[in-house]
Length: 116
Image (cartoon, rainbow, N blue to C red; front, side, top):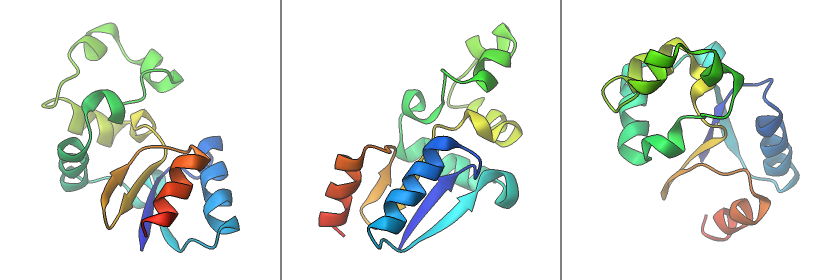
């Protein structure tokens, strides 16, 4: 089964959930704000995906960070930042039996279905 990670009120998450539901894909939704994000999950994500893919540097949460914090972002500083501000984590993240995926593109999701 897939696990979809994100924030419930995110438009991209809503679209992804709608797509998965419409295509009959079973998944568990992990809402960072309700379910949290622990250090172990942060470490797993950082091992599975490049930092540049994992951190959303286009959002308002990123822009609201102090310049020093943004400049100091690294594999070492990212876990604490991700736990303190889960909205920094790019959405959606899907954990599949084949690994991790960060895409809401319907063609990528369709490919995922073919390999499930």
